[in-house]
Image 1: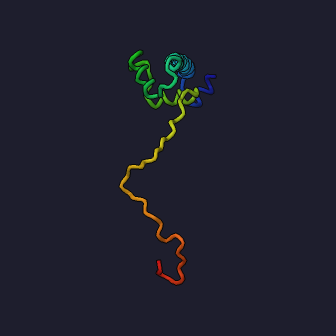
Image 2: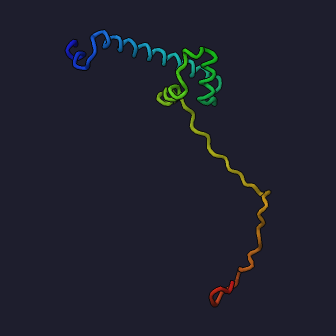
Length: 114
């Protein structure tokens, strides 16, 4: 192990410390996911940004990762909501008038007749 670690320019302690750091990060992420699932249990339609703000209020800024990292965690676990569908409605109260088709039935016999 010492030879492999030396090849990468680190000491053995750095290798084992990185394993401990990864374990802490996984545990921290698990706590965040549990909190998200609990909140989503009460309100399933709440979006990611509101979740992020709620967790900051509940646990403090030091516990919750940044917004983009938080979204990445949610995406990886499949907890992001699908994007909302665009809603289009017809606006019948506009200033553009619908004119009668005066060329209906007209058959031009030469250029520039219509």
